[in-house]
Length: 264
Image 1: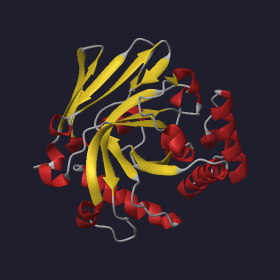
Image 2: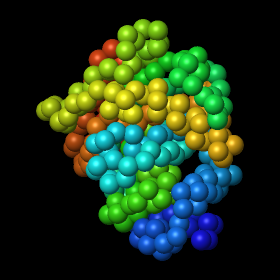
Image 3: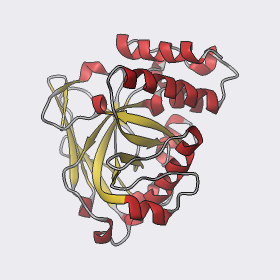
């Protein structure tokens, strides 16, 4: 397949806000390696244009998300500084095509994680703290008609991240595999889950990521963060919606959509 052409098509779809047909229809022999190569080609272009890699996201770690998108293997993508919303600056929702929100636990690191032999203990040793987080996902593929290779090529369908303000040390968490989460939409109960939904334990997801990215020579650097995966199904939003996710000991994180804006 033509890696550079596929990367250009996705970048153009993002720029014009016009989704394209699935790449797996256009390139029927597309492999996972092809897809990650397309993803990296786009990230390199954005970095060359001035963007900075701030973190990584892990996708498709929960049964709810796998069944929602009919994709059953975890994947990953990059979070750039241009994708992070801190709540100070309003972000226009019209920069997205067909967005949804997910709620997850983010790990922030003060030591590097370099695969291929990363263990759970390595993740514990490298973690500075964890925070509740929102990921805005989006698809540059029309109508979310994605296969695994489509979402991988499309940077794991990632579009943005909002990190909660409360920082919690791992030493203050009794069991990170049993963190409860309750999500409200417009003040009403929407969904609930626990962190066990993320590959049984979010540590497992981060270990998987650190070892997977090493295949492409990528290291999780000090100061970077990782969105470890959604605890429940992604939810579409529209102007006027308000979401809040309560992660118990980890605190809360919220998204308010007003006047077509996405806010913290």
